[in-house]
Length: 138
Image 1 (cartoon, helix red, strand yellow):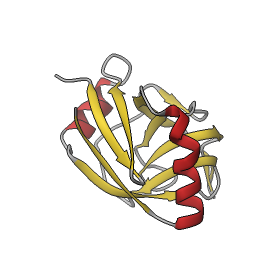
Image 2 (spheres, rainbow, N blue to C red):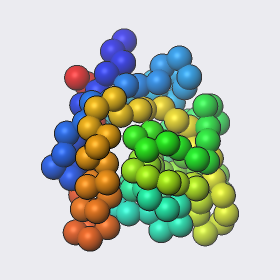
Image 3 (tube, one colour):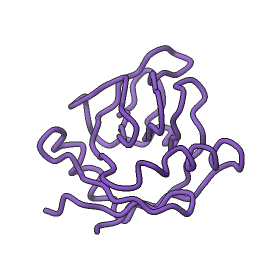
Image 4 (tube, one colour):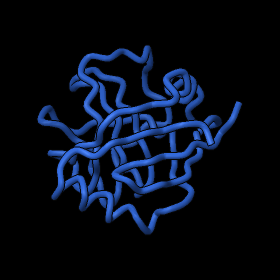
């Protein structure tokens, strides 16, 4: 199984590593959906992050390697429960939350290149609106 992916977000390209050892179930569920195509919008409650709202999509997961405070470049998958299912990417300081309160998501993917461009991605999503997202095997 490959552990590297190419992420194109808002016209910017990043490399990433799937966190097989820390979140094997989450990685397996996400990997089945590759190539993953969607759009990023800016978070409303969590700080400096962008997200993919997934409504009631069921990945069949519980918590694994979960956190409420991802570092810049970390992707979380919130499997649903008190709020809708979602994917979140931190580009700065994040306290993962919803209108229901604090959440924790499964850290399953980490950027390994392009961290210096994360602030630009956040700016584009905040000021220009939804941006395309593609995650594909490297």
